Image 1: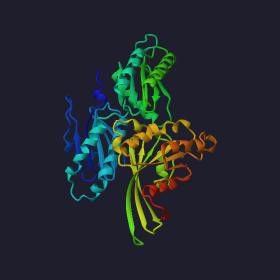
Image 2: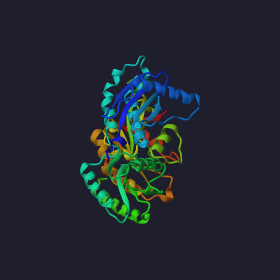
Image 3: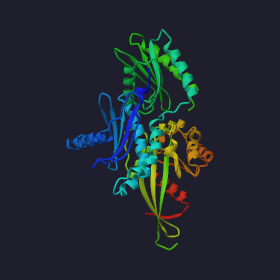
Image 4: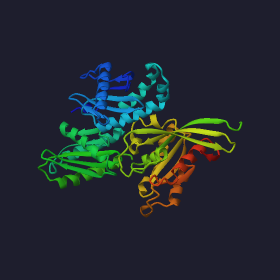
Length: 256
Length: 186
């Protein structure tokens, strides 16, 4: 299964909140997706902000549609918005959006304030930063470490007695770094669970048991988690023990 | 320079260190003079600005606009960290006095990464949560050894909760970067 859907950023926009004037756009078209027209998107988002304001709704951060996830940050009268696949982790979007917002304001914040008319060419050089952030990894791993870690994931899943059906390694924001036989629906659910961990200090492991899965999330090292999807008809305790053993092995091959 | 003249500076400062050591709390204490007991992990990097004014020993009024960057604990692992580390003139390496592991590897994990992209960056080592005296596991002499190894210009113990030494740490960094002796902070 391709991880593409869990990573696809479709477009990024910066526009003035009040007027809807667009300062910056960047789109990433893939084979199976087309990016909506920038003017339509900005008009839609501006209308949504007005609606939220007039309805006294709290600050908008993420809006989900069937085929799209919008994530926003509003700062200094500007709106920074990402359009992504609905399977991209909201935490990862937030991490990247916060970072790109800070980089933009540090570089152009004063200029924007002083601008009488928007000259989008001023921001041309910012494209390379945007590409680097959106196409980069939130938890960089050497490909040699990835290959070695994948070996341990396969070994874990191929043990018949513990009921492990799939495994993946993700960053703390839900950026999937590698996976082996993970079910797509449970992958999406697992990524959503990460929201919980941002409210905890130094999470060690998390277990969720349902009729569909025994899901174990185990911290490997700072910013890195191993997720294992277990068959709920198998014992949970044995699964957790085996997962912790795999984590110990993966730790040894990942530089801290 | 004549008496009464004002000179302005813009300085980019970084706060780095492991997760939950109190970087965001130190910035909030310094910029907004507030503290929150609730913990929430920082996502991504963020910056806030504050202007510091002082008169130097030549009686020149100095205004330093500090751009203080809060580098999330996990942000050292991202593939694009050089984008926000570059151009920094000062870095506070923050650890938690109640958690030994947060001081270990400070140099390899954080400082080496900063110096790669900002080689002139000045360092101060910060031991935070100094108010938690009963839980403290690190002595000042242990921390000073790390300070020396890092060639940090100072080691300061702070408490974002009480405000102890927070302004002093930023004032020290500002005046040392500008290579000035302050007479009075305004």
